[in-house]
Image (cartoon, rainbow, N blue to C red; front, top):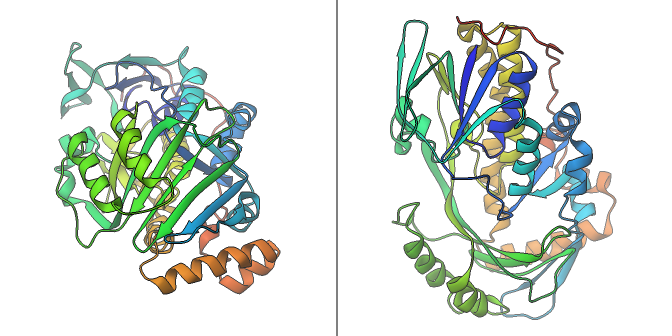
Length: 413
């Protein structure tokens, strides 16, 4: 069976790995002209995703590329005293197994593990999708049209596949009240194992380095009074908005939104938006990861969710021997509870990460002190973080799927 995957970031290569193992013939198309190697921003892999990485034989490589961040520090806007918290202590409350990796480093690991067995088409994109008897006819923006048995959109929050098959993004997106920006810059603060920043009412800014990085990243989170008007590809307007909402903030922020923003080699800006779809499958087309069920960038564990989603989709297709009429509904049932819980968690996380009032700022400082002083089991009990709360990722039980080939690469259904 021939499967086309749109997107070569994280979910796409993970899905390609498992489908190839099961005997599917996989093509991955990626709009970017080459694999992104700018470093991206830091993402988290929690226990279920790390277990999948283990099964892929890539755990050692992922561990070797960890950012190595050991300390988080922030000062309250208007003050100079930093409040510090050890990352390991915080993570022990969230998960029993965790790795923080730069997104592009993670994508590179997955790509290198699959490039010899998977056809990658860089610098191209899907122009149209037309399902007919026995397959899907796909026209590309640059390459010749081809026919596939199945098409999967793994192309992120602003998915092209979703737009072509399900309609405009506005039908499914829900803004959950905040915005995120990330940019690269020289590591002039000399940060290696530390994130340092400042937090105020409705906004926070921080800078971090990493063990594998020569430069650093600045991250901004803010909550405006209303949804902002801009296009997701209009970088000039995005930088203008960032300057407006961080004007007057102290610490390193004037330099960050001034000279560093002007010359930043890479810059990312987007709303913290959830995708809420009743189904992410239609005919022979389905979606995986942020393209189908983004819980919210930076707040919902979307990278772990994408890895698990890709593993489950491939596994259900293997169990159904390529019959999408059985596999796609099973995939949605299997991942559905995780998706819904991630959405709920993301809404709460967005509120907690960006204080709304001075009282919230005070509570953030007190919470930091509590995390530093108490053992993780006690913290879970006191804060109610156990059960079906913050540890939602660790509660995901991975299903076992076939261990080898189940379909012939030339089989057509």
